[in-house]
Length: 157
Image (cartoon, one colour):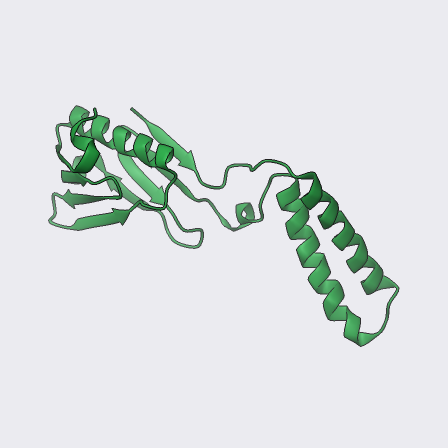
């Protein structure tokens, strides 16, 4: 069972944020072009940045897309996680795993070279967290990797 969740998927569109973004962009352009006093140049730049941010969110694409990716992926070869925007992704190959322990709020992986990786997943949406844990269970069964389940995970799968 493969699993992929993109944390930066397009959000719902918002007419209010779009209108506010356009208003701030127009205000900043007016302040930067027609108002030559120095005290308003910072306000114009601030309005420009806020306008771009609000417009992006209003049309459904947050500016985080420009900074990178944020996702969790489980496939037949590996588990790949990139939970923070400005951090490197973590990739753990199924062939290197020795033991997998699953709790409803986090999981732990022990690799064949003796390293241990613990990852907290409490902040994931409950449905996403459940589907992620179920995919780990299915893949560990297919790969014949020891999987110890805690909490409600005893009863599922």
